[in-house]
Length: 393
Image (cartoon, rainbow, N blue to C red):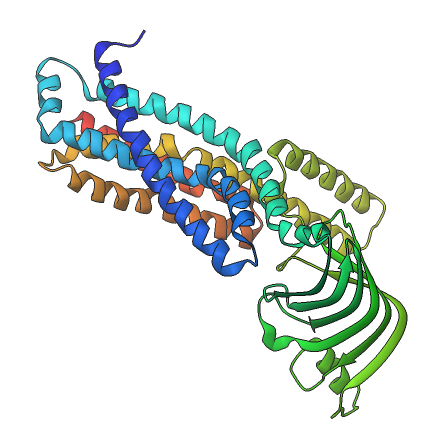
């Protein structure tokens, strides 16, 4: 059963945590809004469809920061108003004052673990589907004439003389071949003119256009991959290169890399993939597989393990930060709640966030996933030292 002091502290923490989390979430929400409008070729309606999936992606990072700020404000105010001194004079120990923060931190860590394992991967997939809607609107054009669209992030421009659903006539496409990400400097412009075209419904989210009676004109002279291949052949080209085909399939992607990342999978799926990769590596070693195959399988398993360690380490943040902050505030006995907030943020960086990033870097460089828990280990040691020091005062 919760004591009166526990209920009192939990109530104050929750009343502070909710508006703090809402404020930080609103700032992240605005940042996501501006990033979408700036970097993606999306209409306002498509942005509104994509935005709801962004905030859940931030929960594992938003919760620890909001909880840290809430604890600093609540316990800092309690110390500044001499409530902690009054509790101490009544025989209430510091461990009793810290218990509500630790219990709530443990509950938030469990929730964060579930969010990292299942909710965040699902939102990643749904966010990608919402962003791919930039191409889906081309399937709903109906009937009309003179369609002109520009997709600068994807590296192509489109003009259609007249269209009837997925059937187009008089199609002109300017495509940047050899483009590296959002960098157009390594691209070779290619002009495609087709008599007719059919828009295909791709399951991958790519835009697939079947061109008929197509003429292609490439313009060498840049620094794209096409130009480098021409120069490497020893042939100097100073004029456009033209070619024709009766039929050609053009596939255009929604910017960036299209491979499925580890973040798209739930943790249970990642663990199954790790087990499968280990079995394949063992089978390749037993049957004398080539070293490149075994190395590739080891790298794949390493990336999966790093993702799992990353999720576990970040999920523990609310509990670890509570264990660091509460004894620090009780030790400071500051007369202002702002001082514990500033020092709490500084201590969280020193004892958790910086070692966490360093651990991830070492884990990837040395191929040792367990090093990803470095931040958790340093935080536990720091919290233990602060609690020991607070218990002696």
